[in-house]
Image (cartoon, rainbow, N blue to C red; front, side):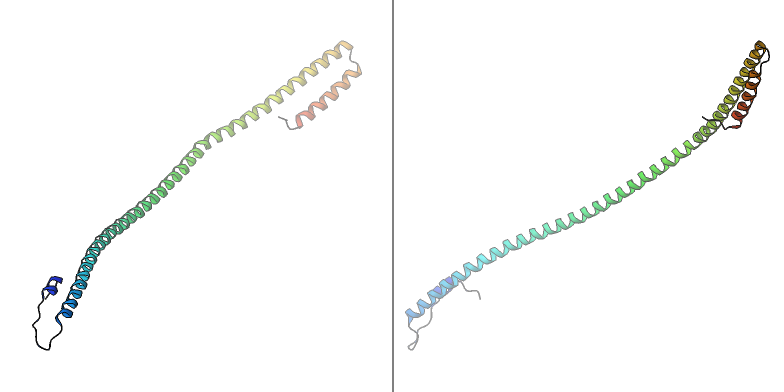
Length: 178
């Protein structure tokens, strides 16, 4: 049976000869009703506060769940971004390696052709130097012969021919200088 402060105030007791003093009992019942009223109001306030706390706890629980879901999504996104960045880096590295290999492969025939061309040009240079030297020597001999004829076969011209021939043989035995 649920008691209310009104039940306590309206309670009537039977009177007997040897019973309690009515005023004392009434005072006590009044004090009891007031205390019961205070406790009842406090209980209601506590119930309301408990409900508010339960609602707040529910909101916090939902917020916690939302945060956990957000963290899981963020973690997955970070992992995906990391994986994507690593794949892109590997792709760029592979493309750079492939491009470098192609450039080297493309440049190799050109380098070989240039090496051959340089060898040919050096041969042409050597040949031109040899021809030019021969031409100069021939003109020098013709000049000496023309001087000998005009001077009458003097000894100075004969000595110069000999030294010219020695110099020419030394020039052809030396390696050509670029």
